[in-house]
Image (tube, rainbow, N blue to C red; front, top):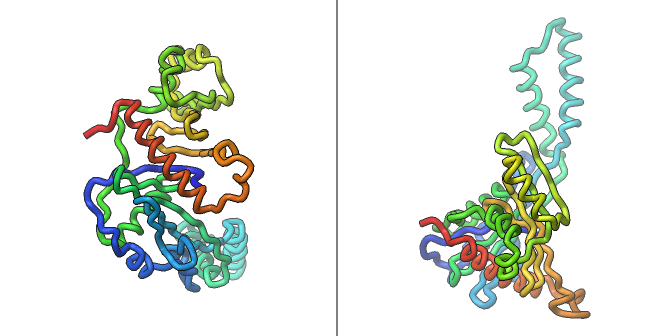
Amino acid sequence: MFKNAIAFRLTGEIETFDLNLKLSQHPEKRCLSTEEKSVGFKKINENDYSINSNEIIFIKLAIWEKIIPPALINEELKSKIKEIEENQNRVVGIKEKKQLKDEIYFSFLPKALQKPTYITGFIDEISKLIVVDASSKSKAECFIANLRKAIKSLPCAYINLKQNPCLFFAGLANDDHTLNDSIFHITGKYQLVSPDDTKKASLQNYQNSTEVASLINNQGMIVTRIGLSYPPYFFEFVVDQDLSIKSIKPDFENIYGDDSDELEQETKMFYSSQTLIKLFNNLINLVGGEKQ
């Protein structure tokens, strides 16, 4: 089940017929003793590194990272500096402090605990979309970079809209007639920022569109995030000005009734992917399409 969604547009053809084999050559691995990070692909199920369901291909990336608390390093650094200053009767300079800090960090690596992060994504060749469940662009780009490395070619780019979706829906909020005709509903969640980034406002369940318009028009604030619902598919989410979607909340109980708690993760993942494809296509069309 997707909690976030960052979309890329496929700009060329890709080879997916032997995808499972290619991904299996870059499997998930824990970090070696001197490694900070290890990246590979995790099996989606017991046997497969990818699943093709109705022409939608699911993939999962695993990132294992060493965890070394900064406080532990700083404590050890203070101890080393004190030892040098007392034994050698001299001040430790900035350059030497950095060198000592690096030495301490790498000395802790072999003993450090490891923690995995999993990033799921899917490819829809029909809609020419790659969608990644990532909370940040850097994580989405990590997924794309490793998938490209595995399959050798992955022509894609961020979707570049003609219009900022947040400004578009903030404008709709002041036009009840147009808003009622929209397939999306505004939930009243807004995040605004001043042009110089000195003022920020986060509004929850804010249904008074006049006051929101006042913040935009009178104080010059810019909407950078807005909450929407997608009633046909029982989805709630927040969209950023760059079309990144966060805080996805599918209402599986409304979709599947009392059996929703017993649904397998693959079923939820497949439903989420189908809905996200429709959602992205509708959002793109509604705000005027993509820049060429």
